[in-house]
Image (cartoon, rainbow, N blue to C red; front, side, top):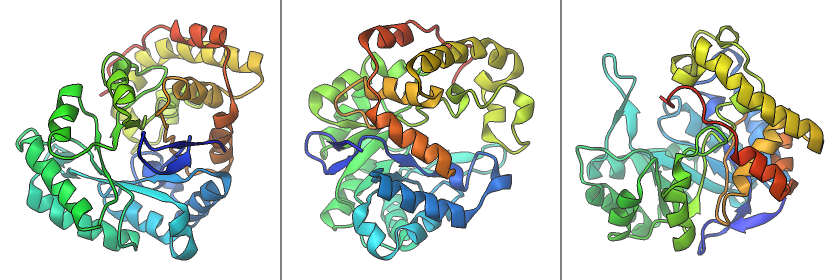
Length: 318
């Protein structure tokens, strides 16, 4: 796989990374198999997929344990390991809460390192900004992890340009992890142009539209009862039916080019900037290979223009 740097000053990574969330959380947990997930992560490294992304909230906590098992021994030095802090198990009707208090960050990094079986992570990210805590305070605590050698660099997730600027006034921002795909393009307006201009890595999560852009979901009834996507507006039956028209266009172009819809969707994301490094998630060896191969797909200007012209999806993200 071809490589790029994690921003203008970061380490080299494969241009397609691996998001590990779905291995233990949110999607189709009936088919959870930690042994297979360990093999997938190690296979990713063999394919040049070196940016491995997890979070303490995934599981919660179990995802880091699986990633830690996969990266034990000689595998750790082959990976650029990223995890996140700032989301916590919720109470009552709130499934997930936010905690950006410095004392939480200081405690969480040690717990993440223990679960991951390592003395440092290569990228420590603030998963969400806590509206109750000034971002400068939270970011300062993440910066302490860098000073202590527990993190090599730090990044942000789901943020605005203004929030990035506020964080940068305290400590450099190595990366921004926002959603970006053919059906979620909000970051193209301001955030991505800013990160590109400033040499900050942009790590699109859900670059395959939570699996929808692959053509693998055609009905809400196909999703398991505990699948997170059942709660999302775009997957509700009427919206889903409307959004299938978008997928049909992707499938049509993929057939013409001779690749899969997933590869078309990833190639479009990769074409959005020099420092754009998508992290599609999978727990299946077949799809891992498919996603990795997208790194070598270069769409023509006409193909990109056709994808740029796709209509906006029906339904909000959340």
